[in-house]
Image (cartoon, rainbow, N blue to C red; front, side, top):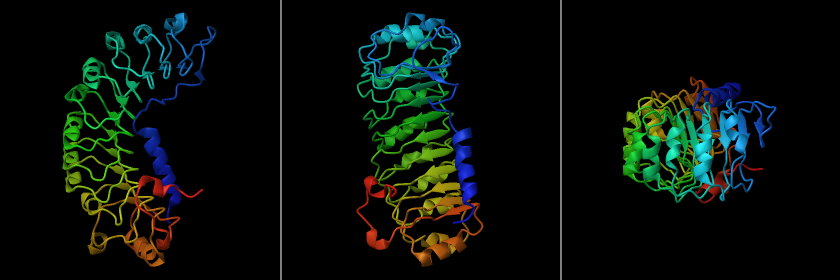
Length: 327
């Protein structure tokens, strides 16, 4: 491995300067309202609440509100109250068994980040239509059993970051819908049980960060070359046996291929010039000969990492669970 410290710095930069998420930090998180405090983050999740505190609307400085897991909550009253908060940017509505959102969600004019994790019965087509009038930048739809996406998702024109983790977004039509988001910067498709990525992913032109880790991929479609702004791709915990040819041809600066089945770098990289500037190959099956060859091939890359290789004799059946790091 060379320049490991640079790897750490780069990953930190991705986290720091990449997409905003529902975990945005606004200081200490309170779990109850203290009238003597000017709360900015309030976590009222999983408190078996039926109503939100009456004095919630007095928290004019509140930026982030989490009311997840309160399944007996009067959601209509709760959203009505939340949307009266003039500076509310983050609203977390996970694990509420929602079937719809009240119309008053359209009054959350300051809202930029919304989490709807584990609400598989939600009418998403109607929901996205309701949200289209807001200036949302981030939405988390993880763990919703989604295998397709309604056209109304494309109406979220200000969306920059879309998390679809732990679903099954495998059909090309879903990628066509995602491609309608003109400002999309980061896309999470990790843990989607993907055995292949549809060619339609090439229609998603604006994405810079693409997360495809923890799937069952053995190759990438050639259409990835049309993703002109793609600068980092996460492919860890998949089933690749070589560095995908598409990555060598496309010119993606940073590639994470840790925890795959790579035992040979692949002929494409031996043939001549490639455009990868940083690559992580930790926890694969490269023997000493392959590691030495790889170190030479990637001599001019900014980052090359191949720590903690497994023995080929330990090769197990391909699958997400097969690639957990050893304790």
